[in-house]
Length: 165
Image (cartoon, rainbow, N blue to C red; front, side, top):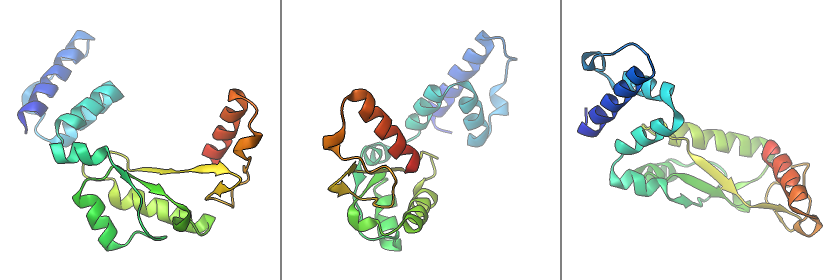
């Protein structure tokens, strides 16, 4: 166990005792899975802090990067590069999208193969403006940017697109 993990665990145990939960002993925490379960039970913020404390500098830098990748499926070569550099997410372009069923398979494949040991979700982004910039032509919501009236209308459009994606 890393010193930082032990320190965080001790902080967690102290916090649990402050809110009236039974005292635990350090001997009970012999595996990362037990510590992870305890941390997740406390707060998402603390869990994020805990994950970051266990990451190398290379992993932290990689998580800051979102890159575009070629093709409509994840090749072994691309997966290896994304894992090697601990890339946090991909940006899907028009040439990554062929159909609704293809993109569902592709995004599922990205999540399954690239989530990583730290269990940090792999991010997937795109640019779907509607009109000319429309990577997902099969979506029902295709309002052009020029047709957006105000912030409330933009929010409604974004919410609908988000649900479909």
